[in-house]
Amino acid sequence: DRKRSKPDWDVPQRPRKEARTYDIPKSDIKVLSGVDGGQELIEWLKTKREAIHAPSGTIELVRFQKTQKLRKHYQQLCLEKLKWSNVPKSSLNRFLTDQLLLKRSSSDPLLPVTEDISTTIPEWVKTTRIFQEIEEDYPVKLKPPIQFVKGWHALKKHILEYMCGCEEVIKHQAELITPDDKQMLLSINSRLKMLHETNASFGQVKQQYDELRNETKPILCRILSPKAEEVVTGLLEFCDVAVSDITNSKSQETEGEPEGIKQTTSALIFQDTQFEITQDALEKLKSRFQANNNGSGSGMKEIFVVLARYQAFIGDEYGAGGLQAAIPTNVFETLQKEFGVSVECFASPLNAHCDNFCSAFFDTDAPFGSLGSFFDFYPTRGSFEANPPFCELLMDRMVAHIHELLGASDEPLSFVVVVPDWRDASSYKAMYDSKFMRAKTIVQGRKHFYKSGLQHRTRSSNQYYAAVHDSRIFILQNRAGYELWYPSDPKLDALELSFS
Image: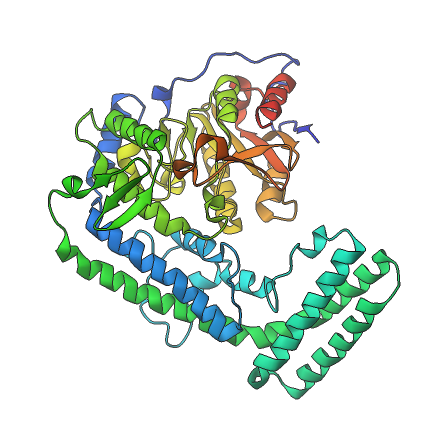
């Protein structure tokens, strides 16, 4: 499934041959308009770093502990309000990711602050996906999702679980259900029971099941809405208190923290809290720190702070590292060779391959080569890789920012974007229809791999996992970028092969 797009303007149509093979040196990347690379890039980064206050190990440890309690509080809220024993998978991680993109008043680099939510939930919160994720899991989390149900036995199991979920709603949310809605739910459940016992064909049963679920959805949404708001309100109130406690803890900052950090063969320990890290990952971070700090300092405090921040961000739940997964090393090497890629748009010190990268937390990541948030980064020249966390709000913002950059520069500018093959997603459609889309290709699920977001604490042999979904690769380039990094068939072949 490969397509090369003809440019919408008068870009000369190149013959089917390789483009020029030289790469733009990293020193030529323009970070801001009129600011070239080399020494000026170094001075720009130095000035940007001096403007931030790097957190101490003590403060970051407090932030980690508060975030751990936040995760438990979220579970408790879902249990109390929705009668769920498990929260929607990674929903809190996606909420934390979403809120970093939005205009918020929080002084904390990780947690949101809302000054007054006694009367209404702030509009920025409503633009995150947390309400939708709760809705999708109500009344019960169905595995696998209905679109992946293939066999008759799996479909019957799906119907039975959905029936039980509706019965739980009637039982536990009686005070929120009107007599009419209760009667409709009972009627739908009766029809679901008949459907579960029928001998009709798989296709007929699946169609009727979809129709009944669509009939049930508006009723469940009416019941769920006040409970979902209570969950999110409780979440935000907890964050307000947590940020206040973190701020008050700044008086506890101490000097000499690097000496207080202990190292074992598999972890760093500070004040009786340990964070796992392999020796290889530790050496990589030390090397990055030395390269970005003129070889001065041990970097142990900074490494501990990074570990604490990202552990707070991604948590410990099963599959927690999914939003921090990276493309394999082989793919990066191919991108560097074939497309001149030198900077990652979404990475962290723990998973970055390139020397420089954009990341979510400049205050903790700058000592390791971070350029700050991609959304505060305005290159006019260069070739970049973008494999964002798979959050729809973030991917929408990413595409808009890439389009803005490509439209503003006449110099060679190129982005290789790797995303899941979610064809209904607005970001996917925007790239597919983009005038900057020069080529696209696909790698099939189960036949290509990603590198775990927990790679820093995982042995090399266990760092890769097979993607469950197809992945789509878009090549977005302006005119000059298309000329310099022409996406030929041999290049796309090499790129596809490197994923396997």
